[in-house]
Length: 368
Image 1 (cartoon, one colour):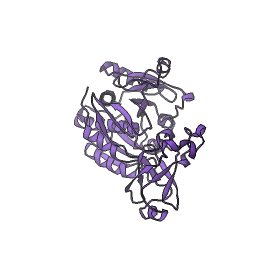
Image 2 (spheres, rainbow, N blue to C red):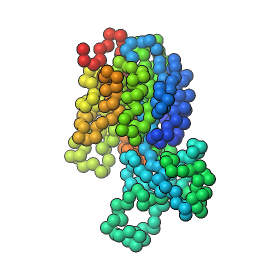
Image 3 (cartoon, rainbow, N blue to C red):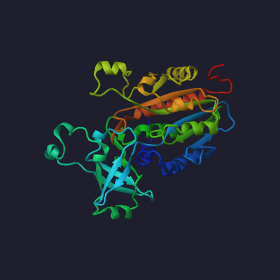
Image 4 (cartoon, helix red, strand yellow):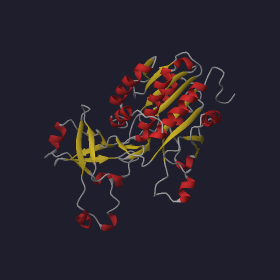
């Protein structure tokens, strides 16, 4: 297993960045990458995509992108009796909501701790019809912050629209595993920061102009702000770094595992092929992985499986960009406790570093 910077990983995971409210995280991200870049910039004032560039003026110009945001709920309404009701506009499984500790990010960007209420089990058939007991709606859950009325809630800087996230932070397990609430996609953000640091230390070997981008609102936007970032940078090639659900746990039977590509932890990144992915880019990624003995899998992209990701929007930015996509396996995506393997972080960073060093002014990616 390769070395992982746990201090940085913990820092990135524990910083909150609910989708649509990423700015505090972005400011910290810029301070982390600034020592290893020629320049750090805010790419757009409207949404807050941020980027760092190394070896400015090199060829080709490559853009690596990982979204900074995490899934969230929001304060939907504040009741006069001192409870907060929720709205959910993203991919959080509502069966995971009751009984959880959460953070509400108030108007001053302070973290207000609360718990999501859960009636006692023996009252289930009394409060709700028994046949409906496993099918709660989001508006049937509430946050309790321990106050007497709605006025006290508002005095704490909470109002409708404030984001709500699970409170779980970074935890290390034995045997090379770790977990936290937002490995999707802090794992990808971590890999790009570590890649930039490695490239900076050996920049004399670098021919390409390298951009790493921390994008926003991937979890909630229908427009994918990565497209805006790309239209500012105008790269020759783009690589999206994100996460992929592993299928190496008991919920999957053998047929399911085969169908979903048998993705496992500690077997390296998934290199996607198919929709929006340029084959010259995916072929070079695969070639580099084989050359440097980096474990990996090939993953198919199909629109029928909801495969419209940041890669789909990056590919159509400007006049079109040849795009590749590299995914880090994790378990339990969009849950309060997403689990990953240190070695997959290391192998993904190694792949992207070797890929970048292989690029020069004669590299042709895309259709010619």
